[in-house]
Image (cartoon, rainbow over all chains, first blue to last red; front, side):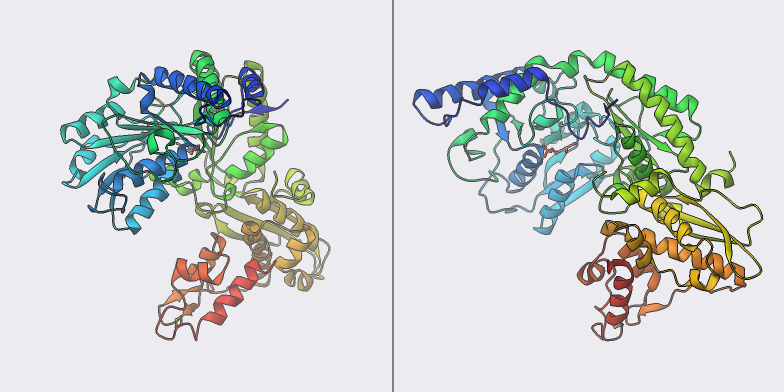
Length: 390
Length: 187
Ligand SMILES: Cc1ncc(COP(=O)(O)O)c(C=O)c1O
Ligand code: FES
């Protein structure tokens, strides 16, 4: 049996999306061309834009397609830093507030802006993975141009109090961006009700293609583009549209399987988590369990190292992920987990399970069995296991 | 897992000589949980200095478990003087190669065996932690830690630790850092 529990990393294409892509393969016209070939592409692209705008309760004009969320996040942070005057970056020494648990596409962009002379404040998070609204209020300055806080974290699933953040920002007239990659397609989003200025999303996290995504930008806002060129996307993102990618997003969102299936996915996640906590001793959930994506659980299995668990589960056909040391090129413990105050050794012991609409109860039962076996096997090899007092 | 070859995977999935030896002649432990690796080696040595039995317990990634496993195989039945000579390069070669960022696991395995042999021979080494960069007072531990955490070139070690940027511009320390880099990264 093959079980894919790494949906926060990327998701499989839904069969209907696959079909739609195949059928659209022959629509090759350039969406900017006036002839019928071009207009067919334009229609498809605009149809997707409409579906996405409807989902967000936005105007289609407010949707800018990009190559994914990394680009969207770069576009917002760098575009806002140029302060809306010219594209000569940082003409006004901008101050941006973000958090210590952002995705690298925010964190490293923020570092780049710092290098160019901008000021960045990184808000701390508590043990539950959430920012402190009082700290946010204190950190706002005269020259704060943007608050960028991810709506839900990819590693631990923690959901930030985004409405409260926006309320605080509005009072001071500061714009708000949220990296909504992990929320988009999982729950309803109403940008009007939220009052958010910028929101990024990524196709491959909601059963559409990779290398495609977008940005919601409220009409009244202005930013400088990252990619200059033709007139596409309101001159905010030049380049012939990735029409297939855009079509795949429209189709995936039209079906919106994740959101429709959320109750079932949540029940599967809870079932797996409850099993682990009850049947495998010395296991701990990282981050808030209350304010959390319904498909995610991040658990530390004390006494064993995350990569070895990932590897052995992979051998059984089960795909999970780890922010732990050995999994990535850098051998440091996950910065997100250390930011929560998780002890380094427990951060090294963590594994993320992220479910999706294609998972079944049968799969989860299989995972439970293999997981218990694998943890016991690795613990039997661990010098920490016997010596520790249980 | 794309990164590991079949032999590494075999030693990870079916590790040899796992466990403890109750009446061990010697035990050696290296690493710490905060860094993500601990290796503990148990030796049973007879009166002729032959390693009759050897077992391990390891907390760590796939490579840490595989290197422990193969290292125990490589010294079983050998004289302690031969075991002393086991290098991390030999371990990596026996495994048919390791991803670069996992080479430090092989260093740990060789160190664990040496530590167990020290225990057997009653050698109490002061923690070897000489100052590498005298201008800036940067010690060996700091440099080793940087290498084990992904600084694989001279430039990266310099960036992470600051070695060679002191008053003598590295005249006194560059060579020592290169030696350490070779120990970890020559493969
Ligand atoms: C929270 C978050 N933001 C941004 C990204 C980057 O998205 P993309 O792969 O589309 O660049 C990801 C996924 O990798 C993510 O999880
Ligand atoms: S000893 Fe390192 S710079 Fe002089």
